[in-house]
Length: 310
Image (cartoon, rainbow, N blue to C red; front, side, top):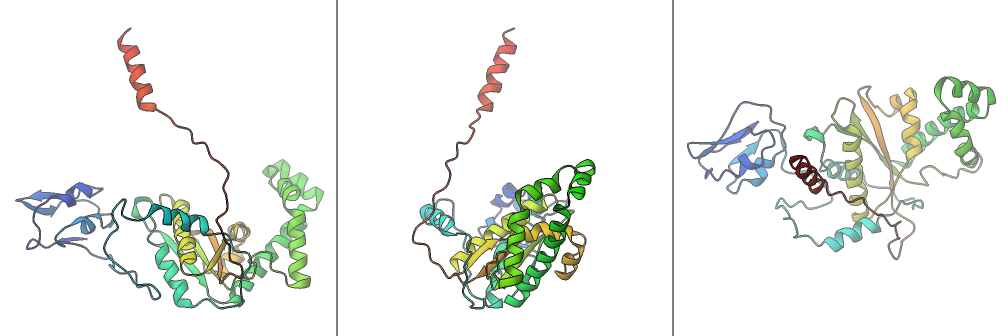
């Protein structure tokens, strides 16, 4: 997969330093490849100062339709960290949208931006389903509502809850105590008044899936989802992760079939999208966090000294 132009190569060796699988080495003062499986990460191509390396199968451009692409990498420390943090804090879960339609080209750009996320062993095993119209989102909402109607009918039955506790833990009982009432009210509002408590009026949606056989498909899909959320905000859209749909789709074969999700893929996120009807004036606060700081190296060193002194 790696093609080296020996006329351009200056033998600097940077490519051999960054290759995760050590497939590149300097031979006769020029870079060359050795046998092994290339993961197609493109590090060698990105680091080469003379443009001598090409990784076959990797497109240089994402093909964005609504943004101008630049191929010059931003070096560590070159981007304004304050602006990045402000973007992250400014993105809020949107629960109030206008009726304006989101262009398909913009939704396709968001998917391509999602693929710039890191993935385990560079598998890039994610996939995406775009629902470009409000009518499409409503179909998914109806399917989700059908699933939770059935679940609520089971959960409200004491015999079902008893049998579930005997043979499958207390998950159904926990659902009944924590979610049954709010879900029942949301279903009533949807059926009787057309109030959308699920997608909140979002006019489009993106579903993010991952190949089950990948090394860490859930993490890959969620990292791609975060890219989509931040890019959506930067491009003028509101967004919201819809966890209830994910839970329903994981248990409903009918929903998976309707959303064209193959058997070898799992659904990991559903993102509602649209133009926000509300503008926030300042960022919201976050709960303080106190990370656990571990000095394992010094602990091991002290333990080793103690052993040697015995």
